[in-house]
Each structure stands twice: as structure tokens, then as C-alpha cells.
Image 1 (spheres, rainbow, N blue to C red):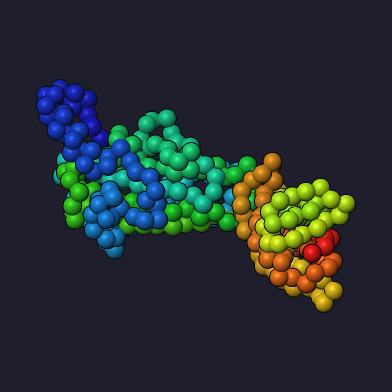
Image 2: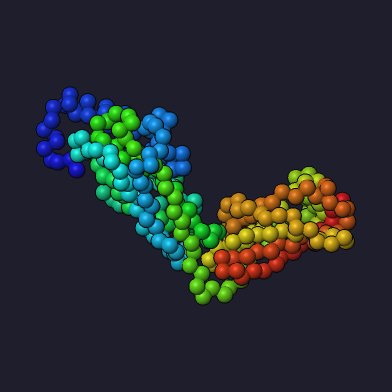
Length: 290
């Protein structure tokens, strides 16, 4: 750590040190959690097998509860001057991060990424607080991190060794017996969907391609949303809808459907919604394809 005597150094030397620290991205980086520190983005060279980045996260979390996540680095990079030891970039697959008030960690991208600050690169371990999404949407959360152990000379070189890490946390579903809830938001009852336009109609009509949208919620999280299409010839599995964000307090799942290729006439769309515990429900909507 820097000492109080550091303030007695001449201003010119301070400026030189600041320039060296800037060369090494000492104020932190973003967008490197899965890409790493090479290519001149923040340091040089390829990932080093002799350097280990560890993400310490709980194996499981209670739905809605946060957890401490620690990123630590071990490696052979020597310390030339006792400062500028290393840095990191951490990004969870969902949720936000909060940091201690000591100023050693800074947040990026709407609090969805964390990195060392200019006062926090004199160490090789950092702890942040992970806050899961307010509306449960996933059964597993993934943490990615890049970490760099540097020698403190402020120069990007092969003496600085970096690597990547990943870890995951699952939702604890013990005792969960509550079924998820859901509904189709597109297509919607009593609406005509004509090549992307939605018009009021006495019945649900569909003409042309359509992005099916299902709103699905659960107190633990949604594992998958499978969508099926039933017409006069039988039922066909369209595919799995993918998570598309939270809309009006509900998780939206989208799946493209080329309704123009389907058999004209009456259809029933069925969404089979499964939560993290395996509890499931079916929601349907009747429509007519023209």
C-alpha cells in the first residue's frame, strides 16, 4: 500500500508516476471479463497458464438474496515497487454490483461490471456485493472475470501475466412447490396481427411472420419456456423462447414464428413454462391464421 510519506515526493516525480500508472490502465477497465487483457487493450500477450484468477462465489443463493463475490489473482509476476500489483474486471450474467466505500473498486455499465480503481490496484484480491435481478428470471447466474498480475513498473509488457475465470451460482429451490404463472402477450386475445401491425379485431387473427411473446414469472426463476402450435393436423413444437428482458414487472420470452408458412385456419399456441424447481404450467391462446 502507499504510505503517507508519498505526498512528500516532488511534483515532477508524481507526474511521472501518474503517467506510468495511466499506461497500465490503473484506473480500471470494462468489457474485458470474457475477452481478457491482451491485444493492447489493457496489457499485452496471451493468457498466462502460470497465473490463476479465482472467482469465489456461493454455490447457491436464496431467491432474491445477494452475495459477496471475490476475485483473486495468484501468479509469478514480481513486485518491483510494492504498488500497482494488479487489476480485474468482473461481470455477472444478470443483476447489479455494489462496492465498498473505500474507493478501491469502481463500477461500470450501469453497475453491471466492476473493476479496480486507481487506488485499488495495489492488491490482488477484491470483494464486491452481487445483487440478483429484482424479478427472478434465471436458475443459474454466471460470473466472468479477467485478472492481471503486474510487476508495478507501469509499462505494458510480457512481465505482466493475465488470465480468465468463470464461476456460477444456482438458485436454491428447496421446498419450492409454487407453480410459475404466465400468459401470451403477443399474439393477444381479440387482436389482429398483420405483418407486425396490431389491430383490434373480434377474434385473434395472424397474417405473416410474428415474434411470439410470453410473460412468465416465478418466485425462484424460469428454467425454460417451450412453445407448441396445434392445428387440425396435430401439434408441432416451435421451439424454446429466449429471455428478452423485464417488461412491466414480468419476464418476457420471445420466439420468432413464421405464421405465413403454417396451415391456414384455427390454431392453438401453447407455452409450457417450467420453473427452477421443475414446477410447470401450460398457457394457451386460440387464433386463426389467414
